[in-house]
Image (cartoon, rainbow, N blue to C red; front, side, top):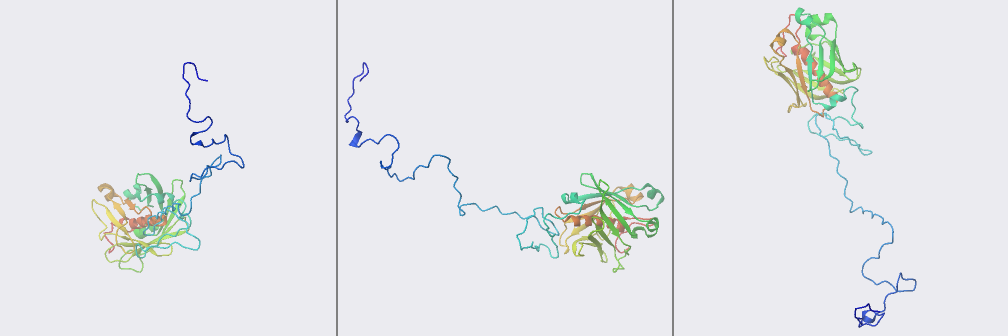
Length: 334
């Protein structure tokens, strides 16, 4: 029935039949035996519910990122530790002839108390001024303070020797030295036997043993014979040379630093240094208290860093220690 005021429109198609004369589809979902859905070329709609996430095929999956290798060098330990596959071993690179790479035993082994040395590349060593020694020229036990580059105390060191040896043998004396941390725990022990110091006796030169923890040897400092230059070899526990220290021909430099270069075994380049720093005229003349700076590569094995500290103390005793009636040495020929 048409609404009031509107004319009735007659459709040109028969009532109940769409254009083309095709029957209208039945209302609702088809049942068994009913009509089949038309083939439109597309996959059928998924069933209601959550769709499973399609798994990527092995060919389309991105490859895992390659592990980056850490730095290597003279007896260096890389900060990146990788576990080797079963049945294989870490190979050694031939970056420098004669250089031994630190073995990787899971996490890199560090003697207790030396953990902080793994994080730094230089230390400062200050010898304490002894008033009795400065006034009376009576040789006392040397004491040192080891600091970082910010001046913060890391370790303290004290010589252990008898009075007769100190005043009779002077800088040639044998001694034991303890390095203590801030909790007064001994972390490094140095042993210097009695040896000759003249270059005319190459069969009996200076050496120093480094232990950490005390009783466990981790390295040696061995003086190498040379007619003009002071040379020292830094050796590991197997007595294999890892580093070399080469000093100047003259170990006295007025108003300046005296530098001992740290080099690989073939002495091809400088990778660090031990420098005796100028302390001022008054302190240099009136006392034998010295200041040193030790620089080494950051990723150098921590046991070799501790051995370089021992080398600094040995250099101080050989070239810069002045006893009663003695003078500072000018070179290895004295």
